[in-house]
Image (cartoon, rainbow, N blue to C red):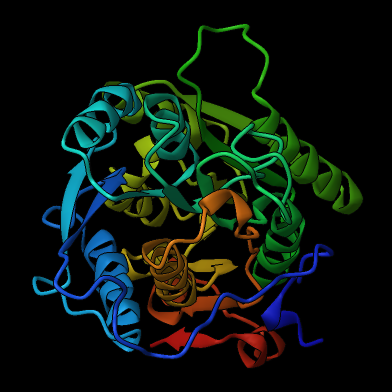
Length: 337
């Protein structure tokens, strides 16, 4: 399979696509809760994801305002706000809760066992405790689980192609737990994948832990002092709220970086390699539709991405003094001039 389409999960994906038909229970206006790391008003990438979901709903015969409404809440980069906002959605008795990311899904899971929860871009959903299995999630959760760990090795390979002779790699990750606390299972998996790939290429890994937005400048300054050849950033709530500052830092410091989603490239990042956000959020509508028609979320198999996009920003490459190899450009799904 072409590299640019990436990794297809070994778990068989059961596609939930259904034809566009009249919504269930004509006359009812469904209420959807949306619990996200950032708000559409403050984050264009979040606005795009919400718009893509609404497009998917239109394709299934639903009209925003006529057939459903969305009550959106965001933590604006502060993970500690998830439990309170999840509780607010539960108290308002929404019909379903959509949760971009693992932290939001875990908070919603703790807040309710009755309201259906549909997650997207969640890390290993089984390892994180969201579901019992991919085929039979059980409980009140279902959705789309990311394959980030499987892609991290590929990201390092792609960055190495863009930066010949890369010898050191900075890893920026968020750690909200006390120093010395073991990594959670998802971060441990991600770090194991990065370190294994780095060893294969003789690359030294330099980890930078971000513990609060107030420490961002100090964390980035320490990273710069180590003079890394490249950078990989783990997508987590806190870094998503400051992604423009991070991409600007990488450009100023002349550090080539690869990210997990294309919205980083839109914000000025060099490269991204990860699941297509447009595809992921449009497919969410299929889950919501099935739930509206009476299916139990625990009976709806969790899917993993099958479309993986490589996006390259040539304007940023030029500013960094990089010449992206033609072989890499030909494999890209999109090249931003």
